[in-house]
Length: 317
Image (cartoon, rainbow, N blue to C red; front, side, top):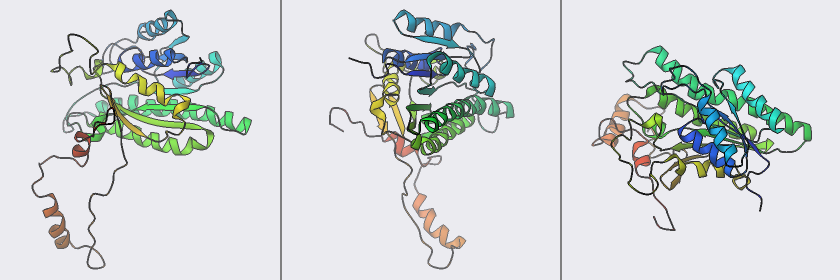
C-alpha cells in the first residue's frame, strides 16, 4: 500500500529542533523526500554561531529510518538563501510539492520597552521568512501549471500562534508577525487555488525551545506522551500536506495535545446603526459604553473565543 506522500518532496524550515523536527520526521514517515532546513543558531533569540549540525542530525535520522532527506542550513529570511533552498529541492527531487514554514526566533519585551532591532529581527525571521519561501514555491508551481495547462500538486503549511489569536502582552513583535502570517496564508490560498495549490496555517501549542518559559510550570508526565509534545502537532501537518486535504484551503487550525480546532473568520458580534445620517459622539457613547460595561479591563476581542474552544472527541463536546 502506497504511503500518502510517496513520490512527493517537501521542505520544512526551522526543522533542526522542536516542532520542525517532528514535522520533518512525520512527512518522511508518510513517504516524502524532505529537505531539512535550519540555520542552526543555538540561541532561541537568533544569536550565536550558525551550525549545520541540527539540520544534518535530523536528515541523518530520516535516512537511518529508511527515508530520503537532505540538509540545508541557509537563512530563509534572506532571499538568495531561500532561493537556494527551493532550488535544492527541485534539483535533487525533480519538483517541490510541500512547503512547511516553521522557522522563527523570540525577542520578548513589552511594547514600551521594545527596541527597533528587536521588532525588526522577529518580524524578519517569522513573516519575511514565510514570504520568501512562499513566493519562490508559488512561482515554481505557477510555472509548472502554465507549462502543462493543468493544476499541479502543491501544499503550504504555515505556522502562526495563539499569541496572535488571544494576545501576548510581552510579545508585540511575535504576535504581529504571527498575525501577518495568517494574512499571508489566506491571500496565498486565494491566489494559488486555480493552480491546484493549497495554503493553510496552524497555531500549535507545544513544549519546545521557543516555549520553555511559557510551559515551565507544567511538568512532564512520568509516563506516556507529554500532552505538550510536538508529536501531537506533526500528524496534522502531515495531513494538510497530503492528497486527502485537497479541499482544505485558507484555513487556520489550532492544534495541541490530541485536539484540533478549526477556527472561523471573525464574525460580527453586535451591530449599531445611527438614527441619523452619521453617528455623533453622544450617540456612540450611549450605545458602546453600556455594551462594554462590566468587561474586564484588557480583555481582547479574541480572548473569550479562544479560551472557550469546544473540545470534540469521539462525537462528544
